[in-house]
Length: 233
Image (cartoon, rainbow, N blue to C red):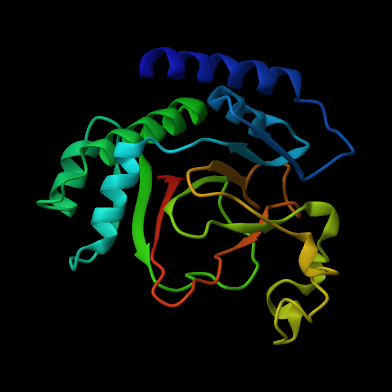
């Protein structure tokens, strides 16, 4: 099944790339689907986030809950290929009973490398008790996969509602909610736990000035979040 899914994803990516090469006046659109092959919509020049909306299988949820309930730290950062992934995670998390989670991560790594015809990925799997990047920002990368296995998931803003002059130093040190970056809290979008999102960054060719604006969510006291990110390496 995984092989069929990878083949379909590659085919869809090629179609999307060919169909949407022409420059469009629209920028920064969001696309979401329950079909994983629709992640290839990230190749559309008018799109800066593509989301696969999914429900995590129960075995994955159970393993993640047990991992976060344990006392051992979970902070994995490595560069790997699909072929070396399982061994690398086994070394990084010795003794952890996470076969279903590793299977899920392996599928995402395979999808990512197939979609972008890339050999290796930079992988980070981190248990968080606070927001890792609490301010809205853009990533200076071509495209990043983000998925939250448990806890509050990534928040983001549509391109059309952002005053990009208020990003970073443009905020003049003011909090995001009063800097003028966006008009109202109702403008903030949020992924759900389990969602797989491709976030187009500033280094995607032709996407300069339209990288997805996003941030880590604030966590409640005692809440733990398990975050996976994949980058081209």
